[in-house]
Length: 321
Ligand code: SF4
Image (tube, rainbow, N blue to C red):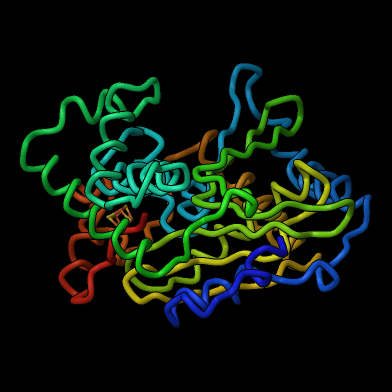
């Protein structure tokens, strides 16, 4: 993606200029990756999980996303609770509404007003075909007002901190990615908040961005490395850079993608898949690991360690997008 560096940035605020500097790079600086990388990554994943996958009953598949991988590496009891009670919550809906609003802003006719974007976003999701529609339709007035208020706040911050997303930057919000191993016996999937740019030949030019409220946590970069690994297998060239953007602070936390990073992400996914399979076969003794994330855990009501730990965390986990 070269456009950002070609743009006159003098009209941009300092924080917008920082965004341009973080996501842009001249083509001649883009790294090149070997063509066989995608096969090597897939091979690592399949070799590392084959023995465990062979233990699964014929009708059972393993579905993983960044939350499942993070949970199984953290609190296994939370992983099991999320699996048992999947569904939407206001924090999850907030991310989807904000991403939709940003998507609408790219093609908006005239100057986009954050509150208008959020209202349009909620309306299109509520009456669209996505599975969030049922959740939005049954929201009570108070939750709906809170959701709208939170989303307007976040979209306003995005509008303040980011330059206008130009079409030639190829911006895509909520980009779905997926990798199947063993003919679908294991499925790795994800949804990237924002992608910009694209690969050219074997040169990496794409940037993956996760938008966050709250503060940096190490898991945020693990999530993005997982996405980068799936992208590398999917199109044969990884992204050039991954970045978490913290809207409350107007700050990036970014990393350039390397082969070592991708193989490390593949190893972490392998370990996570294997543990998921072990829990699938015997979930009687999950590890319990309290953290600030207990605040949003579906098992909190019945989890004494989680309840005790929450009283000790006086800096609650701020919601993620
Ligand atoms: S409340 Fe905390 S410790 Fe308990 S299962 Fe949930 S995340 Fe784990």
